[in-house]
Amino acid sequence: DYQGPVISFNINGLLPSDVGYILQNSYGITVRTGLHCAPLIHQQLGISDYGSVRVSISDFTTHEELEIFIKAIREITGSL
View (cartoon, helix red, strand yellow):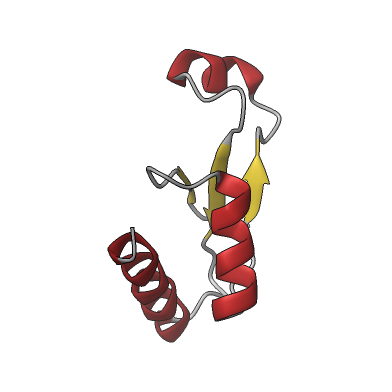
């Protein structure tokens, strides 16, 4: 079984739910947003009110999909 990496992040100035909405509706990228069953770490990081954006990468994720994701994040952060 492949256990791919999970990346959690936030973008200053945007709620995780807003980032998830933008990724889904503007780029067709599905991510999870919120507390991700880890309230203690979110509390420690000071983000327990809104959580984070979580993206999962697996063997089925293509190089092209990664490039699209990176481009989307650059565009979103560049518009702030």
